[in-house]
Image 1 (cartoon, rainbow over the protein chains, first blue to last red):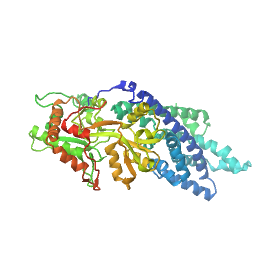
Image 2: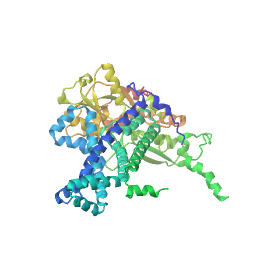
Image 3: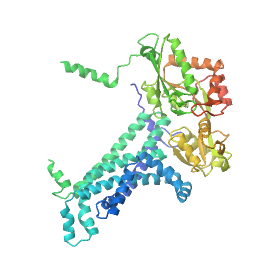
Image 4: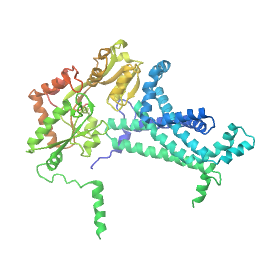
Length: 250
Length: 300
């Protein structure tokens, strides 16, 4: 295939805009990071609560948490994005009025972080549950024997260990979230993949635009991976899964 | 040393066979490829009504497809082939150029704007349609002119040429609008029908297609003003003079003979598949001009 690579295209001006293509890409990175970070905060907060509820003794709370997980886990992300952006505002009149008044970018951003946050929360909830259930029941009982309330047992005994144990799958999940944020392009949010496509369609230099996007996604994901690996090392408790696996390595 | 031979083949496997241009004295490029393989691959769109789209039997049909079949006939007689296999390959606005460049498709028949920028990558046949980029609005909004859009939210489809045009217009007319992007025309139109945007900025023929397909077409109106005119034409590989001349001749004679009027009427002023909707889009002055003087001038 004789393709003429033209990397200079990033320094060409966007028609009608007075901007350069590399600036579009950088703006796209900004939105990708903003969506990922906000969605991750929502996902962590909700996922921790829902995952914990699944391990409690109360059957009502258990079913509620189970329903939450199944609901958000079983609908394709693409469909969820469409529902949050196009359908939900139609069902709630005050929300519809807000969506029409507010800056379109804000409406897209909110829909994207709610959608990605809730979707990812279901996945994190399952990891939190697995983390808690992997602890021996002796931990729970020992906490109770010390006179701690259920809340205190979770807060001081179970959750601190569970989160350490699930750090590796949590790393994967946060990397997935960054890549899933590209789904937001379907509701017109101008994130990285959106900008790469846009640049491709204006200049027809699709290969250059998507090569850049690929490299940027790898760099972002690898940075998150390394950062969380550092956290994993710093918080490791000797003798437990996270700590042990490290000691086993040469 | 049998292994070595395989390793020597590796670059050929990875990079394809080394191209040897002008091996045969007469045929080069696309025509040679067609002669050698006995087939031609046409890239078509799936929802560019009425240019190139899938009908109720999932067969690509449309105005551009009819014109491309004229080219296929011309290729057949030029190469004196008794039979020529026509492969149909669906393309999108994102992959049409790479697929043309890597040789997957030989001719693209859709709704592609011929622009000077794009001519750096590919070549174009004669203009077969001229569109106006303008706005569709709801009648009850009372919007009469583009300037009335000041301060309003407008929707458009991402990646289309409408976006930079609109930005340019905002600067020159000194108005400000907020933009929302739909991922395709149906979604941009949905934003308009849900009142989340006051106008949908797009090519007039595509707007007419969206309106014709809606439940109450009477609620919408297309503004008379135009942001820009853009020529549509079929796309072929760059620097392939022999094939380009053949395409120009084939389409040029369809236009000169007046046959084009019949093909135009079939797709733009008659009921078309799949739903039997009539777009009622008569030839505008620039379209008549393009038929009278066939040309492949791209827009800036």
